[in-house]
Image (cartoon, rainbow, N blue to C red; front, side, top):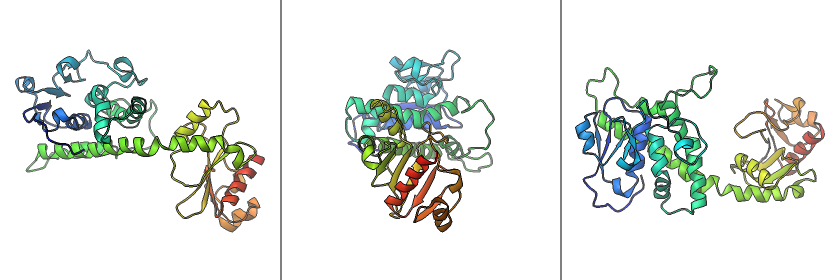
Amino acid sequence: MPKRQKTCDMDKKIGTHNGTFHCDEALACYMLKTLPEYQSAEIIRTRDEKLLDTCDIVVDVGGIYDHNKNRYDHHQRSFDGTMQSLGSLNYQTKLSSAGLVYLHYGRRVINEIIGKKLQSSLLDIIYEKVYENFIEEIDAIDNGISQTEETGRYLITTNISARISHLNPSWNCKEPLPEVEFKKAMNLVGSELQDKILYFCNVWYPAREAIEIAIKNRYEAHESGEIIVFENGGCPWKEHLYNVEAKLEIVLTIKYVLYADMNNNWRVQCVPERHKRFENRLSLPQDWRGLRENELSKVSGIPDCIFVHMGGFIGGNKTKSGALEMAVKALQLR
């Protein structure tokens, strides 16, 4: 949690329920304690209404959602609030206590974790990215909303909500310490929130400029205009690419991205049809897939090949010129 000078609000109290804890109230409490007015607040875990009434703010318990009264529960029948209905984001997942706290305090939380006041336009972008890529999942899981209407092909048991759940004292624990474990839960989910915010602000967003430059220079990479090049790998290009293409009104879309890897070899990666999907705009040729090194170079007619993945979405070459030749030949063979 960000370090700040202590305030005089030593006697403030954050209320939440006792018993089995969940990811949403652990995150809600963590977010509140990043704010100066609640930094030193005591967390009271109870279902006693009289005790909750003594708290300055209450999350995930009490059956009331009223921002004017600092009450943020989502369990009452009357509550069906979403980011779309209560805020300004186009997300229709019912909010948990984490989502409610993020709705009202999220922008301040981001500024506190970053350590400075972001420009409003950038803050709005980071605010939405953190909700989409972190908070919404917690909202959905806590409210029992499945990710898909179909039966999943495999189980996912290591998400942050599951890991928080595992911190609850076990049924046969002889000396349970629920308050200690709740603090662990807050710190665990809070560290992941920090990671998300810092990533989107310091890594993801700055990549947009690099991607826009690469797209504008695409005809310097190859006359087709369907290949872009990054001199360094690791740039989070995928989502930005679609946004920049739309901004520049590009009709002939980018098919391949070339970049150097950590071993100073080069990769040619296919652009997916859509962000976070596995289908490619143009996969690498079927005859190349699953081949490596000499065999791949022989079949493709391109020297210094390293591999092409069985899925056809990525390949490697020892040189930049070789990776470019792979991309160009794949365009020619479509």
